[in-house]
Structures are given as C-alpha cells and as structure tokens.
Length: 566
Image (cartoon, rainbow, N blue to C red; front, side, top):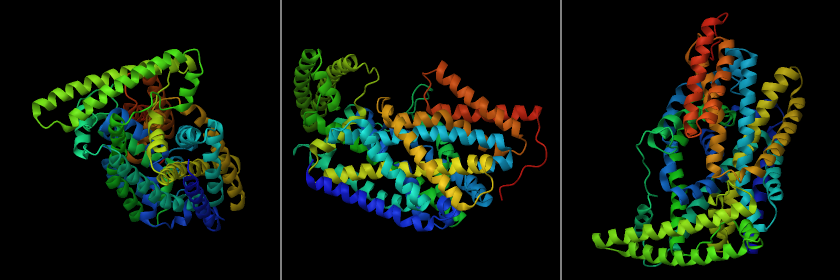
C-alpha cells in the first residue's frame, strides 16, 4: 500500500482518538459518563444511531452480500419505518419519563429484580457476541493488506476503540460517531464512482444494470411467503419489524443513544432519521456490491478472494489440482466476459434474449469452477464453512482503487467499525455496572467508584469481543452472522417489554417464566427446524414470551398495581 494511504489512515486515527479524548472532561459523574447529561441534539443522536448500525460489517459483509445475491437483502429492513413509528409512541416516552440509565431498570419497576437481571444478562451475551463479529470485518481487511495474522489485527481495531470509550463514555462515543458518519458516507460514494469509472468505455451504467438484472441481482422484492426464505417481503416486513422493535426498543446500545437526547421530542426525531435514511443507505451499499460483480465480469477476478487461503492451497499437496482449477477458471472467465459484453451491447430484443441465455450459461460454468476450487480449500484447510463473501470488497479496494482512495475507504471501514464497537462497549459497560454491580454488588458508592468500575467493564468487554472476532470470520456472511446472533435473543427480550408496556396483568413471575419459555422455544426451533429462517425467530420468541407470560400470570398473579413509566 502506498505511503499516502498509510498517512490518511494515521491522520484519521489521530483525529478520532483526539475527538474521543476531548470529551473526557464531561465524564466525571455517571450521568455524564453514561447519558451525556441528557444534553445531545437530535441530529447528533440520529447520526450516532445510524453510525452504530452502519458497522464495518455493513461495508464488508453487505457489499459481499450484494455481490453474491444482489438487492434481495434490502427486504430485511422493510419493517424499520413501521418500527420507528411504533417506538416513537411507546418506548421513547416510557424510557424518557422513567429517567432510567438502562432499558432494563424499568423491568424491575414493572416486574421484579429477577426479570431485570435475566433480561440484562441476555443482552450482555447477545451484544458481546455481536460486538466480536463487528470487529472481525475490519480485522480481515487489515490482515489481508498488512500480511499480519488475524489476532494482531483484531487487537489493532478493538484496543484503541476500547481505550477512548473507557476515557470519554457516551459523549466520546456520540461525537466520534458524528464525525465517523461523514467519513463513511464519503467513502461509500467514492467507491461507487470508482466502480462505475472502472467499467469498459462501451458499457454504460444502464448496460451494467441490465447484465446484473439477468442474474437476478436487481430483484429487490420477493413476495413469496415462506418460513424457509430469509429475504422476502414478508419476512422483512414481519420478522424484520419484530427484530427492529427489539433492537431499537429493547437493546441498550440503541436505547442509550436516544436517552442522551435533550427531550422526548428530540429522541423521536433521531429515530425518524433512521427511518428515512437507513433503507436508501442500505441500497447504496448493496448496489456497490452489485456493481463490483459487474466490474469483475469484465476484469479478471481471483479464483479465491482470500489470499491467505490461496497461498495455503498453493503450498499444499493439492497445488496441482488447484492450478488446473485456475486454468479452467481463466477459460470460463473469458467465455463469460465475451457473453457479458454481447449482452451489454445488444440492442435488438431477440439478440438480447440469445445473449442473456449465453451469458447465464457462461456464468454458471464459472461458478461451477469456483465451487470446485472452494472444495479444494475446504479439504486443505479443514474449514467446511469457508466462503469468499467477506473477502470480495477488501480485495476490490486493495487491488483496483487508486492511491489515496484506498486510504480513504480503509479509513471509512475503520470508522464504521470503531463507531459500532464503541457504542456496543459503552452499552455493555453501562448494563454491567447499573444492572449488576450497582444493583446487586455495591448499591451505595460515590460516582468516582462507579466510573472506575465502568472503565474496567469496558476493557473486559473489549477483550471478550476480540476473542469472539477470532472465529466469527469463518461463520459465513458477517452481516448474516451478526443478525443470527441477535435474532436468537431479540424476540424474547422484546416479548418482555411487550408484557411490560402493553398489559398490566402480567406478574413478575409470569414475565420471568415467559422469558425462559420464549428463549426455550427459539432454541427448540433453531435446533429442530434449522430450515426456518432466523428472521422468524424474532416473531417466535416475542409471541412465545407473551403467551407463556400471560398464562403463568393467571396462575401466579401480580401483587399490587404496576408502576407507571411516567
């Protein structure tokens, strides 16, 4: 990589760390450290919320998803706008009026300490796992670029982020998120321009989209109703609605963002920012993946996008078989390139139909050769889950972008990672201290003591996430992995808050047993029916908790009136 790119990355890191350290002055009390004294403007909260969502997984995993599968993934977010409307009239007023530090504090007021503690523990497990997955995406890129081993690059990303989060608390997180969001969007737009400019001179953007459409990658809607399909209109609208309700309404990493807003109205405005901009931004990321696919129709791609596995296979006893696969891949690529060129420039409808049929056949032949090469990798490495999807975008960035832009895009990827990691670590530390340490271990202590414990907790969760990151890269598409982790827990956690906010009949025992019942139901479905898409786990968990909770509450009714949130 050119020294200019390294300079850009170094300047970015210095800028972000300086920004984070600047905000240590307002973090001498727990209200300032955890909630920024509830003083942040709506636009800063909104950008922080979006930056938390738009992790390096989005830039690496979602672009890879677009490369492999096209725009279908955008259906995952169809429930988001509706979720924001619902939360604006439920969760935001509840939490703001309750004056809580964590979402789970309210559960003790409404139910009891055991329900609060179990829900908090589930959040810590789910978010700790997801945070590790978020670290793995940029770690993969750096390991490719620098030739370093994965543990070293994981620590390079995780440790500096943990340090400025430990020092500055939520204010450091929020205001670094704002600046990082600008870097991320600029990097995405720059990549899109670079991909388009990299197409052959006689292939327009319209031609490129036509070729991509022939493979189904431009299909953004699938109206089939199937529990086995992850990305359909209905799974996104229904399963995605429950996932988004839980993520934005019951996940401390998001709730803590809008608890820092100056008022209930400004917190609501910050949520609507995500409702309006998340889907268009996601389409942009997926379109980059689609356009990278088209780019590699005309520019030779590697047989394997992961150079580490490529080198390992070349040094193995399967090197001869792999060389033959490379030869076949080269021939298949030339056939596909010719077919893609013919399809892109065909004007007559009948000629276009013939060209499309030839192109699809050539594309299928190339994918077959790649599948055989992947099988060689799996035999050599013993990694049966190996997939190339997480390495497509990093390979494109480091091999085809011009000097300077590489550094900008890598800084954007690091910005996306650090903004999400910092938010997660801050939320994990807040929940650890408020819901466990202060509630169960040491209820009475000065703020300076809780701040010290918070910083220790941030460091612990940073190391925990680094450990998770070491194996997350081999679990498939990272954007799917992080949502699988979340969907196992999210629906059940949402169910508890539904019981708390919707009905006053639920007892503490009912909520507690309902939560266990919902988690058990999700685990049973995941184990016994792995063909059911993980998005539906959110619906199953939420409904299971509500049904079990209400039934148990009939047997063990609550004592006294429920506490109101206001």
